[in-house]
Length: 494
Image 1 (cartoon, rainbow, N blue to C red):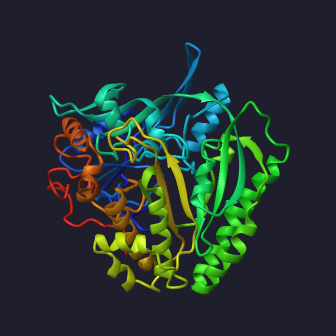
Image 2: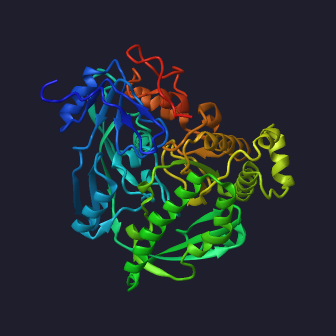
């Protein structure tokens, strides 16, 4: 293949350490021509793209061909008709894109997630999100994609800038082709005002949502109180003079020391100490009732990539949030086996789907050791993003685990995912631990069949599909494999 080196045969392990595989071929192309060359040569096999590996699902797993687009890191910023536009390469790291857009035009992205280590293709492909806005994918105005010509079957570059193809490409989990670059309208840089407050009930948390539309909150296990990150766009307000102190507190105190302490507690493995920490100490670590104003990239992001962990995230319609919170609390307390207060409504709901006895059999088997995170995500203009086709905002509920081995967490997460899905039509995040399959979620995505048809139009052979894509999206061939692929693929290690 010319000067394009094949570096296959080297194991690939994701950030969380729960997914690993060894592709036969691995390429790092430097041009679009080289990408097309790979696609044509391996058109009868399977091709997936590796990004930052900051994903917990097995969406990247492929034992055939892996493409690494690290060289596609260009950032071009231009102004047209008074608006700032950015064209960013698929392999550019989000943090670098933010810095380069700010330097070029004093602008930023309209939305981004809490972590900035992902590459841009990964950010788009799994509909990465923050709180209070739609996902990042929603704001993409055009994507440049390498796929297969429906007429000739040869690899070709397509630009999706409108219509159903754009809606499909905005969140496609790699099934529509290889994203090469993306374009979006930027917004002027802005500051966020943030105040941490304690609230006793969910009603109190939601009562402030209109005033703080960007807020997110956590439910503190075993204390069962809420800590709310009340956030609003501060517009032209000046950053706080003490923001540097707050940055130091957020990074050293929360991102580092808090997680070191949690890792210590789970290593010791004593449930009583974990419960004591959350009931007696956790709230004291929060810098409550003090407002800081800082740049959006500082307030809205964190560094939880510093410590290996696993995450499952479920999206619940806002109208079912209160029930979902009650379920999460009851299931967490029951799995822990201590101080479980009867909740007849939750018990009746679980009994109605045949899961109450299963929950009771798990009592005392797992002590959850991390706050339960909630973020409000607005509906997206995409075919299969987690809030696609929604008529109301969803709340993303995140469950983190820093404990290894993870066997007990998998049981806990699997139970919660099934219960939330069956009771409240919850959708799992594509890029996080994903215990369900397409039979559980098909009816939750009104345009999923349309999405599959578009993918098949630009990839008739299924070259861009792996077992994960077939499992969660329900393509016609159940295992999503080709003759050139191995019959067994690794799944999240349990």
